[in-house]
Image (cartoon, rainbow, N blue to C red; front, top):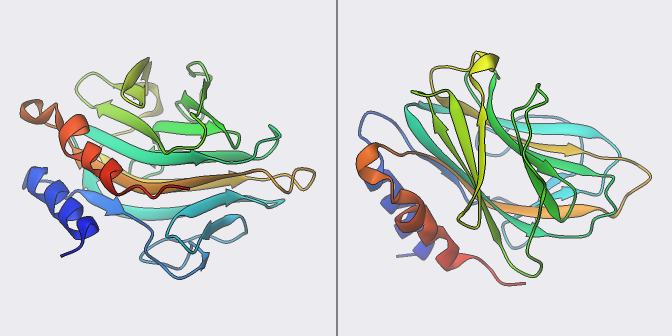
Length: 223
């Protein structure tokens, strides 16, 4: 039985039976992410690589790959792992978590080696963090629908919270997007993303970040 299977099973066991957890380890053939397992979009620069990661960059186009998922409502933990690549500060990558109408709960964006928390479509942002080189960095957003705030974490360190409720987001996290806002004058900028997940985090499972999702780091590939 594979470690990846055990991790996915653990996520589903930890999830409330009312809501469906979502996980994607990008175990697809090399090439564009769009067209695989519900991912849609058109453009370049969001591609599955040989070691089952997504490489964002290397393109002169603005492109989002989008997947709609079963809504996960309440208090929700959204996780993505990022491995810093080359950055000239021009190409922009992004990871979005939206409701079913595309209204944003929280977003990470940055260059090839940085990440910054934001509520998309607003000026609400937190300070940029530099990703630790040579390793996978865990980027988390905890969406709290009872308060209307999203809290952001980098490798377990709390960065702050932003109020998303002005966006009108409701009904739970139901859409995940990966963005490449590329520029043709910076063709070599890139970052790797992997092991994205959206999991309910009820009050009885507030340690899920460290116990459940943290298990994902156990299988992170070393570069």
